[in-house]
Length: 575
Image 1 (tube, rainbow, N blue to C red):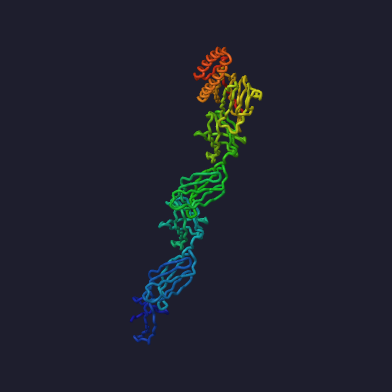
Image 2 (image 1 turned 90 degrees about the vertical axis):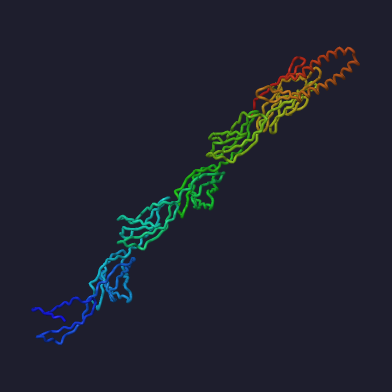
C-alpha cells in the first residue's frame, strides 16, 4: 500500500511506482481517503515495459533482402521492426531462443536503419537500432582480355558507382579499387606457371558486404615451341618440326594467310608436319603457336623454302679430249646451280637475261666416262637433281704397211656417239684416185702406193668434232717386202704414235712371211740364171741389215732412202 499526497493547485495526480518487474502485469486499486475514510476504490491493470532484445544483427543479405536476427526476451513472442517508415510485426515461435526474420523487396547495395521493439501487452520496449545493407549486384562482362606466359588480365563492368571489388583464385584474395569516372575495371594478375588454367571469382563489395560473385576460368599463355625448323622439302611441300611444349598437343601454323591446326601425338617429344600444295622455288614465312585452352603462345617464326625444279634439257654440247661443255635451261630466274662429278662439286652462277646456262669443265681425262649431276639451288636448297653420263673421246689410228706397197689405215674413236669419219691428205679431201679401198667417210681406208703427205682422220659425233689425228705418210714399202702395223693415239702434249707390242708381233709375223716369199724367188732365180746368185747375196745382206733394225725396237722406222715415218696430231676441236 502506498500513500500518495496530492499537490495543491494541480488537477491531476501522477505517481510512479518503482522497483517493479519488467514485462509484468500489475492490478492496481486506487482509493480516495478523507478523514481516514476510503472511497469504494477503482481498479486498473498495468504492465511494466519489456526489455529490449539482445544480439540484434543482420545475419545475411542478398541484393533485395536482409536477414535480421535477435535473441528472444523471456517468453515474449511479439516484436516490431521499423525501417524506412515501414513497420513490421514479427511473431516469434515458442521454444526457440532466437528470432530470425527476412525483410524483402529492398534495393540492392542500399544501407537501411532498423529499430527493433519487444512488445508485451501492447507495450513496447525502448527499442534497439542497427544499420544493415543489401548486397550489391554482381559485376557484368567479367572476362579475360589478355594473357602472357605468367599473367592474366581480367576486365569487368563497374556496378553503379561502387569502387571496391575482390578477386579470389587459388586460395588468394586480391582487393581491387576501381577508378571513378571509368565504366570498366581492368586488373592484371601476375602468376607463376605458363600454360595453366585458373578459376577466378569476382565480388562487388559495398559496406563490406560482397555480391554473390561471378566466376570464370582463365589461362596463362603457353610457352613457345622450341627447335622450330624445316627438316625437309621438295618442289611442292615443306616439312616442319618442333619440340612439344610439356604435354600440350595443339598447335597452329600460319603462313601466306592460311591457318593450319596441328594435333600432336602423345608420348612423342617432337612434332613433325608436312605442308603441301606449295609453289616450287618459293620462300615462305611460317609462324608457329602453341595452343592451350584456345589461348596461343606469342609465336615463333622461321622462313623456309620449297625445293626448286630440276633444270631441263641438261646435255653435253661440246667436248674434246680434256673437257666437256654442258648446257641446260635456266629454272625461272634462279641463277645458282651445282655440278657434281667424280667427288668434285662446282658452283655455277648463271647470267641474268639468258635462257640457257653453258659451262665447260676442264682438266678431264681422255677416254673416261663421267657421271654428271646437276642441281638447281634456291636459298641453299637443292633440287632433286638430273643426271647424265658423258665420255671424253679420243681418236686412235692404226696403220699397216701392206706388202703391195700401199697402206691400210683405220680410224677408231673411243667414247664417241654415232661417229662420222672424214679424211684429208695435206689438207685436201681424199679422192677415190688415191684409195685402193674405202672412201672419205669410211673408218678404214687403203692408200695406193706412192701416196705421200700429211694424212689426217677427223671424227664427228652427235656432240662435237673429236680431235683429229694424222701423220706424215711417205713410202711404206721395205726393200725386202716386210710391212709393219702402227697404232696412233691422240695426245695434246706428245707425238701421236705408239709402237705397241702387238705391232711388233705383227712385224715378226710379216718377217717370217717375207722370208718364205724370198725363198721362192731365190729358187726361181737359181733355175733361170746363175748370175742371180750375186744379186741374191747382195739382197740377203741388205735383209740382215733391215732385220737388225726391226729387232732393235726403235720407235722410228728407217727405210732404204733413209726416210722415216713421222707422226703429228691436230688438237683443234670444232663444235
